[in-house]
Length: 323
Image (cartoon, rainbow, N blue to C red; front, side):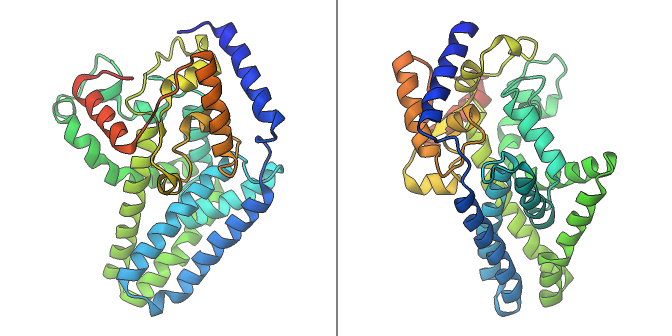
């Protein structure tokens, strides 16, 4: 743990640099174009379902759902518009109605639990879900502990279905009737179009194939951002400065422009965690500032290729050692 007072001053200095270059501002034009294109492509896809074969429908909606997922994530961080209500309006349509995930559940899990307490063994649900691997509780499940290296990778396929279950649990428990209505409308869109065109079994099979591809993709994107990095004792997390906590627990992935787009620019995870409201439209410029600042102040800045990140995760699974 580093000097909290010193690193708080460091972060204030870094934030001043980012603000001075106006890189923290919202991006309404970019956001509006992104929303129009994503929603438009969804509508066109529904309209063209009768003209497309499953071999075209699956990759089309796989790519589109990935982008809708990234867009929902960005809207949840209020990156597009200064007006929070406007961000939320499009977020509820994108997440609840098109991606089929609860906004309330996601914000609690991601913005509150994960961003505010990154890699905390007590508070961060993303790390807590992998309790047997990354934390050190005395209670163990022998089967999971014995086969964790295999089950860890296999579990990626189940991420979406578990997320949907938890979303509906959250909606019902907290009586989020507006979210429930939007989530039920989901069935009247792509699922309905697929079932009408291909019949119940094949239609649901196509939807499952799309869902599995999307969430294996997103599982690997989210996985390499933090897993294998330092796990923080939740009882002492308040003793860490924001800058110290996020640079210790976040990993950047570098591998050219293609990876940037495949990751929805979330491969710049250090910068995203330091400044969650910074739009991906500005994140590369922010990354340059952060990288230079960390080098200047001799602060940890962990950036590797995707393959190297997977290797580090595999090492953590095998030995328990983290970066």
